[in-house]
Length: 313
Figure (tube, rainbow, N blue to C red):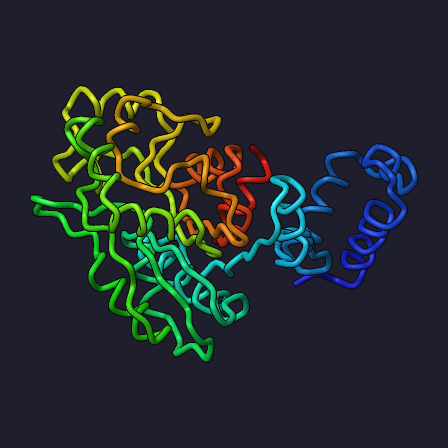
C-alpha cells in the first residue's frame, strides 16, 4: 500500500513524463532524484494503475482498413470481416457469412453469377439467403475433379445456390485438367461446352477464392499432378486462382499446365462488374497478395488479420 507521499511522487513523475514530455534525466534534476528512481517510479505508476497505456490502432476501424486496402490495391470494394479467431475453419465460415450478406447487396434481376468450388465457396453457399432477384443465372467457372477420391463440394455448392436464386446452374461437365492440351481444345469446341464457357466469360459476378501450395492443398491431392510438378509449383507459385497457378507477382506459374486446365482464363477474370475474391487465414496471405497484384479481383472479402498484413506487403 502506497503512502500519500509515495503516491504524490508517482503522480508528479508521471505528469512530468507523460504530460510535459520531460526526459527521465530532466525529471531527475527537477525533483532531485536519481534517474533509476525516476525509471522505477514510472514502472510502479503503471503497475499500480496510476498510469494506463492505451494504443489506438486506426486499422481496427474496419472502415479505415477497408479504404486503405482499396487504395493500396486499386479495388472497387473491400469488406473486412471482424476477427472471430485464427482457426482456418472458423475464418472460412465467417467469411462465408459475410460474402453471403454482400451478395444480397449486389445481386439484381437478370445478373449471371460465376461459381468456383472448394471449402470457402461451400461456406458461402451454406450462408446464402433466399434471393428476391428475378431471372438470376448461375454458371460454373471451371471443370470438376473426376476419378478422384477427393471432393470439391461442387454438387453441394451448386444445389444451395440453385435454391437461393431459384434457378438451375449451367454446369461445365469436363475434367479440371486434360492430359493433352489438344484434347482440351477439341472439347471446348463442342457447342454446348462453348456456350457454358461463354456464359462464364460474360458473367456479371465472379465468386472465387485462392488456393495454397501446401502439401495438403486439394489440387495436389487430386491426382492430376505428378510429384515433380507439385514440387516445382511449391517452389515457384504463390497459390492458385480457379486452378490457375500464379507466381508471387500474379503471372502464370506453369504455362504448359495452364493450357491443359479447364477454367475461365485469368485474362478474363477481373473484367466482371464484380470479381469477388473471398479468402482469409494467414496460409493464404501470399496467394491473396499475388491475386491482387495480378488484377484478378476488384472486390476483396477478407479477415481482419490478413487485411492488416496485406498493407505491409
